[in-house]
Image (cartoon, rainbow, N blue to C red):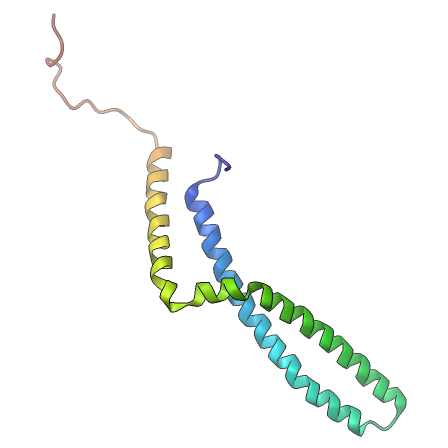
Length: 130
């Protein structure tokens, strides 16, 4: 464990990462859906194309679309478990408690990093024998 890093920073990074995973998962899933819809367009273009050269161009575009779709789908699959865990309503309480923990941890860190001064609590006469 890195002693130079504050616990609150590590916890904040975890939360931010999970939130980013959820967002990226949604974006990738949406893009996969759009690529799926484009397949029908490519097929219709292919069906009504007038020449072999035109069909070759359509086939190249279709191939590129399918490769990009695969890349996006793989990425969505990679992020799916984290995104669903973060987005699950039954885990809301856990994340709320984690945010509270981060706030409390920051207060402790601020106190420990501040300049501390000892303030005597007793009178001068206690414990001194002259």
